[in-house]
Amino acid sequence: MNLNDILGSDVVDGDGQRLGEVSDVRFALDAGAGQLLSQGRFVGIVVSPRTASSFLGYERQELSQPWPLAQLLRWWHRGSFLVLWEDIAVLGSREVGLRPGFTAYDARLTR
Amino acid sequence: MSKAKRVQPQEIHAAPYPAGKVLDAQLHLLDRQVLDVDGVPVTTVDDIELSGPEPNEKIPKGAPAPQITALLTGPVLGTRIFGGRPPSSRLIRIPWKSVAGVDTVVTLGVRADSLDASWVERWLRTHVIARIPGGSHEPE
Image 1 (cartoon, rainbow over the protein chains, first blue to last red):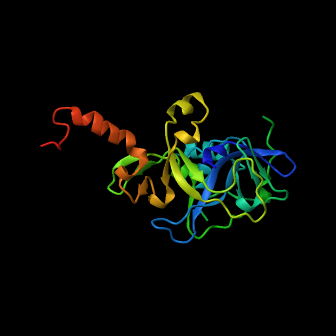
Image 2: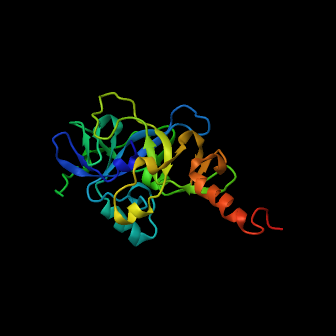
Image 3: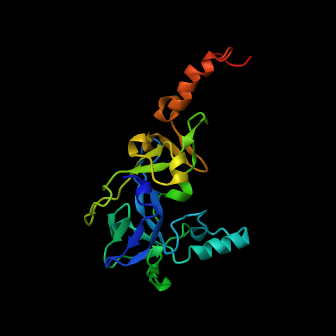
């Protein structure tokens, strides 16, 4: 499977109700050491209720400059959340289905 | 497109933070320049190949998470402008095990000459540049 198959797909919950679009996919380099770099493990998808774009990621980082741009992009991506791999039922090219009772997590990259 | 159901802020929990480096594909990988071990530009990352389920395949509970198997590069300019995607067979793989670091650029641990991704450059060097008088040796 290629990543572009799922980026921009609609995300639906267990009842088939649309929640937004896949704006990004999160990976973690936390598996055992590889030859040069650790394996990239699929952590989850970032769901944005409004847009599939992922421009600069202001909503996921603590960046605040330039101020008008940061405010605009944070507002544009408001309500974005992260869904972990365990809560994904199907990864489709048109639709990504979540399991019933999925948990939405904060999508920010900083702790 | 129907209006999305709103997930209320109080339903959003603090995320568990993985132990290793966290990469968001669009922010940290896609469209980044790829440099080889000597710092020679190779290509850019156009797509990422994952292990794991085929598209639209049901994922059983407890299935292991997919992993990045390769970075993909290929002729995507036309499809970015006019839409669609090039077929997978047209994309060239750079195995993830050759990747040495991800920063503002993606660094490889191998030479560009050993990768399929640089075949156009090698072909031009052999068939075009080498035929130009003085093109087969370094500048003096």
